[in-house]
Image 1 (cartoon, helix red, strand yellow):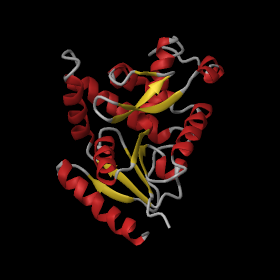
Image 2 (cartoon, rainbow, N blue to C red; image 1 turned 180 degrees about the vertical axis):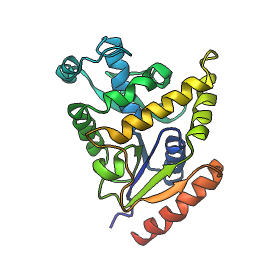
Image 3 (tube, rainbow, N blue to C red; image 1 turned 135 degrees about the vertical axis):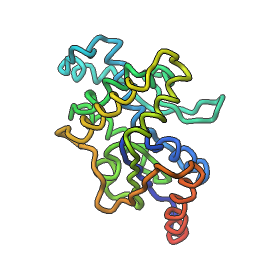
Image 4 (cartoon, rainbow, N blue to C red; image 1 turned 120 degrees about the vertical axis):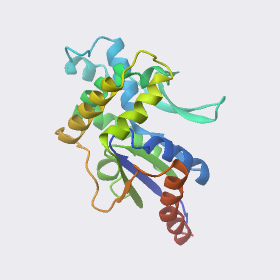
Length: 232
């Protein structure tokens, strides 16, 4: 019997989901899937095609264009990281911009788009040995995942983390802009009609406020390793 499992990590933005998922995937030699990057790539596509901006969103045109949108993951041979690709091209830096951040939650409210992304995610998880982070992984994408985590932290701390990250590529960004974006995304993610962000009933709640990444990694692995051993 295979000892590989599916690990779902959900939570609000900038709680450390992606960083922890990447670290743990390397420890376990698991496939890491950044579901948020998929929606960011879709948002970047919509921006470039002028389907969405701060003042308008043409859902109909974007939905009609789904057959022309291919989102998958490929290994970056330079850093050995799995990166999301949009129609064969990696836009890793561009999809992390504040412009994309301000619009991605609106893209994620569209049921037709979510269904398309979930199809891709299901295919990636067929053989297990997967760790995926996002907003609805434990509730919608993999409700039968063997282990689920839900990460939380204060709004102000999450904004500070995100601000420090964005400042590396955009010196004009302000903390208040990032804080407003965090609050906006929280509201959109938790109140959307389809697949809203919420903690799965069987998820382990982890507060990341006062813990280092090393401490958080150890904490999550303390739940993961006994389960993997049990499945041997």
